[in-house]
Length: 416
Image (cartoon, rainbow, N blue to C red):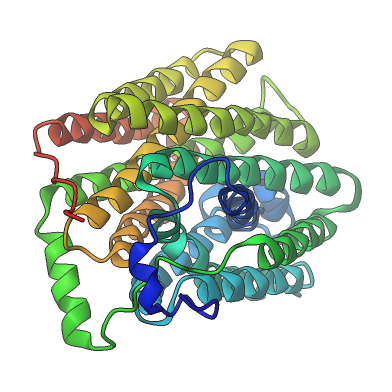
């Protein structure tokens, strides 16, 4: 295949994907790890400073949470375009454009003159950011050998966990000293540096085969996806689990700044250190899925997530921190297995990988937008008890869907 955009060459038919240990495999895993860092660092950069935004602009918790929700909503809607577009135009050009554009808009957000402008920029930031998550799993399924896809997917999800942690820590720490504007500026600069690194390191596509540029072909592929109950279950897992996860952390900032805790925004930002365990758990879950199968690993991950959430009902801060860590580890493990499962099933069947991954991520970020905002209102109306009841119901539904998936037959490996 040619380097530009992944256009196939006659020799491309023999390409089976890079194996662990090869220089290209290492470059792919490092690049997508960094890309994952950018995605979550930018998307959730306002989460630890929600109380500061409430104070500056006179907002309640539910309204302030819109700074997170509009970004995830914009990303979710744009995924419906970015995934199909990548089937025709290629994976790597879209990823690079997405990272650079989103980083630039993040820098502009730090200079927003008012709440409405900040919301508008956050919406646009989510839209342009969609090009990376829309195709990352499809790129892995095409460029990494099938025996290593689950492992590589775990590393990418680990990058998103580290991005979620570093973005929130950087934002919280800087905001503590110099305010929220400087904090958003810092996250934007870090993201821009990662975008440059990905541009240099990421190998160009070799396994990509462009689809016909016709609406009929894309609609036919969409019908295949929507008629597969396994895809629908996986989409449901993404939406419910992500919605509950974001809802918990949206409300946690308010909970830890209120009595009996009364912590500052900088100290509250330390709670996002729990994301570090997500980076590890997603990697190990990917390896476990490759060894024991997704059907075995996914329900365990979902159950761990639910147990961790229920542990946050305790008041002592040490117990709350441990429970959040367990919940975070379980969530990123579940997300890593589910998202890799979508790409693997699409590769085995007749579904388009980019569209299938986009469908999963659409429900994933739609859940973040809808249920994340609902958790803010739950906190306002009923405190932490209401937040836990809402999110426990969502995690419980995700667990039930993993059990349903165990009854859906696996697709056979494609014949060579």
